[in-house]
Length: 73
Image (cartoon, rainbow, N blue to C red; front, side):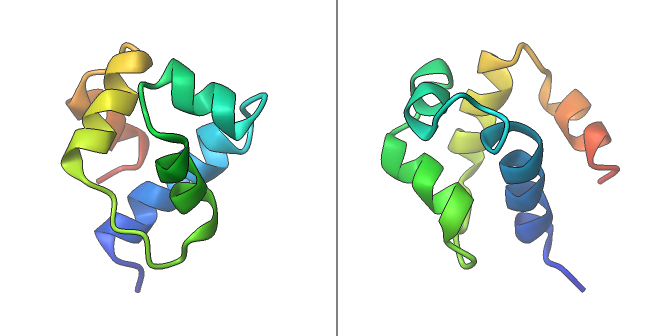
């Protein structure tokens, strides 16, 4: 069974990062360091912080509750 963190990282990677024009663009548009975006995309052990989730939600005009509903958590 996947951890909650892995579900969140995979969702962001598959639904948003992979569809972005580039990692750099995603980073700028979501107020993230490009290294963070690389970690989301490539590091199977990446442990996403709440702050990163919050920044992504803010950039997408999503409430945190809406974000978690997208993943059915």
